[in-house]
Length: 361
Image (cartoon, rainbow, N blue to C red; front, top):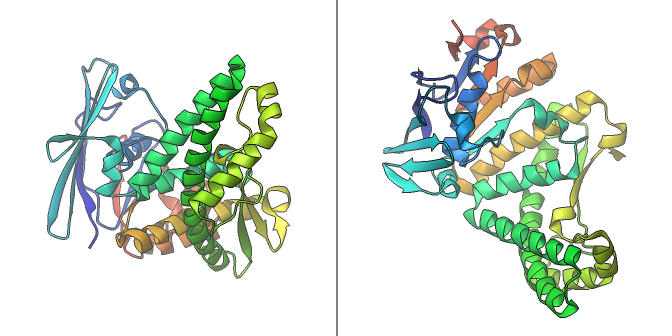
């Protein structure tokens, strides 16, 4: 049995001061009007499992008006283990604790990994390339602490090289940074391609199940021409160095690094046609739904544990068939927290097996 959240309590956190929630090990539905704290609850659960929030707030934004600090505590239980995790935020500071001892935010996914699905994620296909890269990197960073370290180091090295490009630095110094960026980029790309290969095949399988056999193909589109899965890190580094040398004049002219995994993309094809250009809104949303479901399945394959699934107000954005797919999926024993303004999105027979918590009166 995987760890599950058995209790979460709030003190001075946004508009949830004094609230205590005991989620079901199965499906918990938080229902109520807008602005009563449902999404704030989801955010807190994501903080205590992923170590970050999809809203990316400052610490001060977490603190309720008039409070000195915000504090959220959760108890996780399973496999004979009990783990207490806590977030404490105040003006200019934010810290995490596990079993009463300080820990880093990046260490929290090692306790319980979570997967969030919110309305913004429905734009996965038609949104920007950075959104698709971010989705893949966010999952990778939770599933593997090394992935997060590599991503962070590469991002810093690209930022430094960009500053040098804008300043018109000495070519010898730029050569040294090319080596650093190429090594970091190759390491990140190696991780990304391996993760994408495993995840994309699952996305295609889930999509076919949801879309009555319709075929979806996912393709990683590297800015480093010639890069592909199966290459070793040294091969990727050498290839990236060559591409950076070829691009240097353009880099200097534009003041930015134009080659590397920070410029890559992911494309989707439905029955051989570009989903972004030709897919209907329903098809595009099904791709996003299949991606999230695939992340859950891959989490089980990689870690041998089921994640916490957080569905924030997505039922109102899906049609009846896709809502049915979601409810069928979460009935498979995954601890899930769903927020909604309307219980009418669920059949009465389904609600009987779910814990319903009413917010806002």
